[in-house]
Image 1 (cartoon, helix red, strand yellow):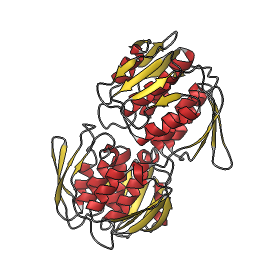
Image 2 (cartoon, helix red, strand yellow):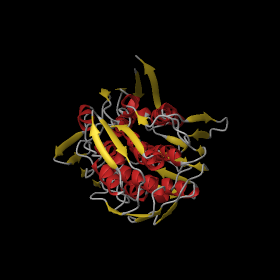
Image 3 (tube, rainbow, N blue to C red):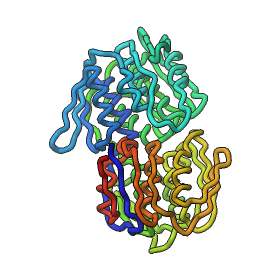
Image 4 (cartoon, helix red, strand yellow):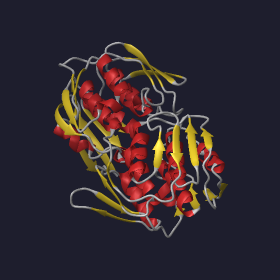
Length: 419
């Protein structure tokens, strides 16, 4: 099993390039099930979740080729196995996104109940209820979802709560449904914008993109297309925090500032000087320690839950005190005990962390618990005195493309070793 060893205290400086978005790539890859031809994706990141998705699609009868220019060729137009098996689904919650496309195109699907990071309850009832409203019959037994529909029929659907994956699943299902589907209280994340834009390029008729009300006029078929995935705003945000926590100055090329306004606002509040161009974001701390900032997570365009752990690490060594409130997942504080072991002054009160910034953290042997918690431990290790070792870094590989190599480019002293 791999682990990361970090020698803290290095000020990060330099330039790196943003990777493509994991949270866009996964639903777009699953949307290839809907197409009657191959999908060619540019800017897909090299991540374990992408590899898992491709293995899952291959297991269902799809074919893929990684072209020499980095483009990913995926042909899922003629699936022969309409089962998303537990052995692959258990490692990645996004596998639930096979359900809507298979049901829409083939009229049936058998999908294992999903796994993924243990960060709290993420019920699939929103997916299932909406598919039932579109005309599907659904049964859950023996750990699998069995779904059938002679033909999905468009309907007005109101989500009881905002859910990114439920919105994505039902958008995809509705593209081939008969008639018009209107989704109310939909999620508005940039990754949904990316998926919808790709689907429209494939021949779908989706309007209201970027709003909470989406209208999907069903079409008879979708075509394969070439599409470039948007940059990963969470990856970009993580590296910007890495620079801020170490009093550094970095530029991230290929980043889109408009998708991460809430993150940039908090970094500015922390004392960072942010410079934005059409294709890059520069952060400069001018050698100063960050100031503590209050965090209150919410659905887009509010502050993303996927950046909460990283800002917890930042706040742990910032000047001043603050509160960090998690409103999306009830179990997303697994990084807190590990940060406390490094000397952070963090107190949990319900769904809020009360944080008092300390002068410094000290290196320790840490265990990563989930994807974003892992990132926060890396950030803490970068600024800590002495050596930090992080076990179970396979969590990081689900969402960060060669994280240690990018950090090395910025001057970090970090190595991946195998036990």
